[in-house]
Picture 1: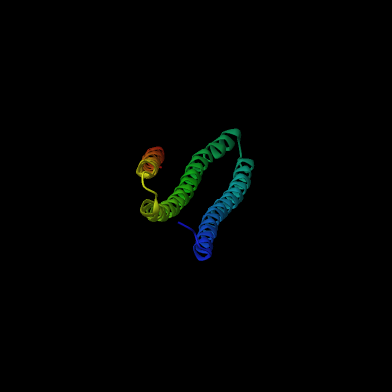
Picture 2: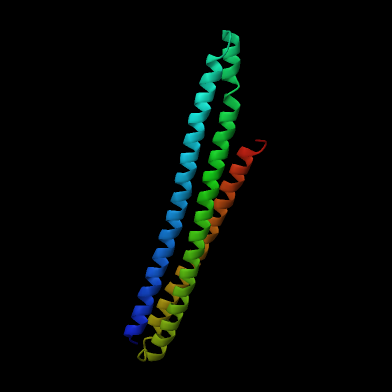
Length: 170
């Protein structure tokens, strides 16, 4: 069983393509978060200026207190909206990265199965135990990956339910 130059080049290209896809996904997510942060900071500054102006325009202390109190609810709603948007961006990014990992793992599984089949055919007599042990290790890795995906999905579903419960009624 030998790996020729063409197989090696193809494997390297696939790896580089995968890394670029992950990097592009991460950068796109960072760009969306940065834009959200800039927009939020700009809006907060504008709200602060507007709030100070309304408090300063008040004719008496009671009107100033009422003006200041009226600013609290919109600020809370904006903080909840900001948190929801950050959660949505991170969830979308996590889902995209999970799809990439699953696709890569599927390709790896096929490659490993092919190599194991070649190794089993060309293995010397008496090495069936070693081939079986390797196949068992691969099956255990596949099972662990499936369990990890299941736990990750459960965690994401629970987090989404918590966010929905927190923002319900807002």
